[in-house]
Image 1 (cartoon, protein in one colour):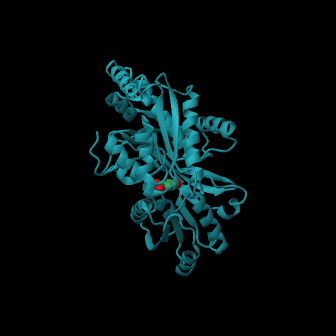
Image 2 (cartoon, helix red, strand yellow):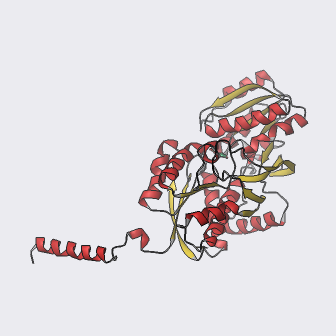
Image 3 (spheres, helix red, strand yellow):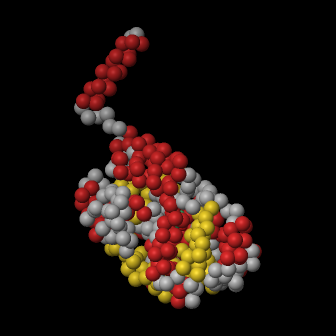
Length: 394
Ligand code: PHB
């Protein structure tokens, strides 16, 4: 047989197979649900990405790693918290790996890329952290759900707590990107409403940690207090530098709770004492649900959980509830989304529900660093919902 004839015979056989339905695309050969995890596994948010991953997998493992009766298969991409690669990385999971659901991500700028791909392809996206407003406001989408917060949610209740302590004039400082700017919006709204004045807004590009000049400026302004958004490795450096600059104990430091979340080890704790923050979780929340979660997480991962682990865990819980309502048939989108919209999540942070725009309606806690813990002082805002302004869902 000549090579040419062999080729012809082969392609005829392939054609036959195709017409009889035997040529199945590689990804459809297994009946597993394909889950894409797009998170930062390197860089200043590496610890946050890993915690989301841990929490998500733990929720699924609790249910035998099955979604609506179907087995699952994981695909992973390190997004490096690099916004310029957001679309490309999301497409690796959606176009190349053909995932049924994309879990991601941490950084708001990268989320923009995921959001574009989610809107264009219709792939189900569950956001386990990034708080960018547009995802559940003007650009909200039926296939995009968030289990974390909007960027302005944690800071909304901060100003009231500061005014209660008599801090009437504050400096706001943050990384200049979507998360910092939007956290600033929330802070401004709450603080001004409570009667405070923001005397100066300071910023530096993400993920820059050259804080020295800005801290010198704060020292010269002498505000009653400082409020900020920083997170991950950069937050740890900010807390350390704030103390080293001699500001700790002189000008009280406040922030959204990311500032101290998952960071209070022996090294950092001395510089962090007394920092007050608002957030939708604290590891030291004294509830049975949280105790059980902490125990299981510590056994599995040999460390304490933080808010990122909880948000990842709740992304898993949300997907489990949705998938179970459609017996694992994620292509039944109408019923899947309806179940996810109606879900009540029994979270370690406390029970929460979905807003019409697909963002958690949840309590915010006021916390203070004592020892190596974010001790809960009380509820700073009850059942706080983001405005969802501009969203036409529901
Ligand atoms: C964000 O970029 O949306 C972001 C990152 C880290 C946080 C919170 C928000 O801790």
